Length: 215
Image (cartoon, rainbow, N blue to C red; front, side):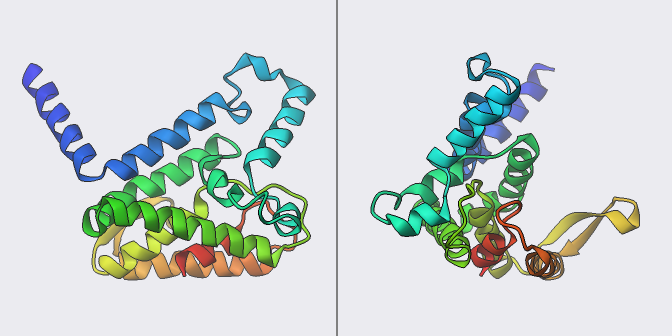
């Protein structure tokens, strides 16, 4: 058993050393979420309607509010950066972190730590800015790393088009099937495109930010 623990610890250390930015981003996003009001863990934020009011103020403070961003660009220029590390609920957080873990490690190893960090933040910024520009009068807050992670998916497709990705397809009873990245990721983009076209209310799921990030 000690040998198994040692082997597992060695693998974990090698993974952390190979992709420190990816694991660091995951840890940071999780920490910020757990300490924030949306996690429901910290009792100081209150409960019920008080908690909901606190969440709205929190998301407005750290997220992107398109109307505010374009009304006072200098004052809110960093909001697309802070919004990358804030998530609306557990499903939002865990879904994003799963995608970042699956596609970020190999992408970071190939690109390099510094390049991957700049790529992630820069593309995430552009993705949220693009969504805000398309919804310039919206007063709703936009948060989440989806735009940056979509960019990682695009980079993964470019760097590893033949890599096989395990997918769970609802119409096939969620059977785990492996397909090449050049099949899975364009299919995912097509779904985002369709969803963006049908989305008439702003920011629920920011499909357009996904498309901008991937592009």
